[in-house]
Image 1 (tube, rainbow, N blue to C red):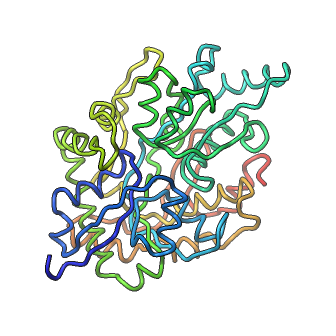
Image 2: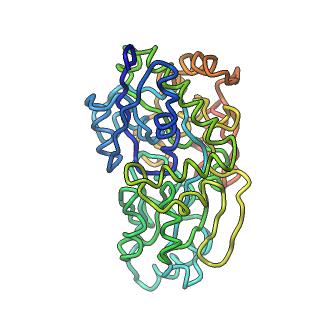
Length: 379
């Protein structure tokens, strides 16, 4: 390992930690002169603290968490860096078997059931996400709001580590959750829950986890960051290259050192094979991806801006930031493009992309204030 730079990298036990794991297992990191020292974390708040305090150099981390830290939501503001997107799609919203038994299988049926329950004086339903500013909270809130449910008034929202979601649902502590795989699949297999929506139903081709670092680390170690991004691009390309490679990744991820879950549980949704717990099975045309010819990895400024618009929508940000300026300094597009060139991966020329979400609204990053004002009851 002479001459190699050691990079301490945190990850959560989720299927989408695969690029970091496979880059290390396959030795792709060493081909670029760096060596990953992987650290399995237990909660997103712990991950955040270790990253901010310097115990970790980089992390497989929630996109929205990084922007929350950047903006000082729930903690002191620390300048952060998004080095690349590690994945897209492949999360899920899960409802309890008890709700499903009462005909609640999607957003509209949940809204109708909640109206009936309120009239009967029932307790508010409890829904879990994995971190207050994170992807799962924002996707859950968006899905609820698209069905006419106000996530700040109509439910009780709680934070639960992803690996505890299925057991919390089975125990009746929560009525539903949004989290990364394989924990929605676990709830279905255990008979505790039903899959109401995949995250790509909420936002097709949404950003998944990011490779995050503090701005201080990215500024002090640009060569190491560039090398690591190139290695992770190679890893994502390898995973996406074939069904056999996805199976091999599932086998490795199943280890107690990584996700610690049954290989088949991981493999099914890694391949896009869904079963909702009520007899419906389907092959998702656009499931979890780690590369997609580079489309899954580019750190679009508009992606970072979207999370800020949702933080503003739900009152986590009390005033409008300069959305474009913040995203420009957080998302290290120049560094990514240099790394992509090293790995032979094409990168788009633009910085903003257009998406159509579940409610039909178009997000393209061009007018964040107008986008926020288009939502009824935005805080």
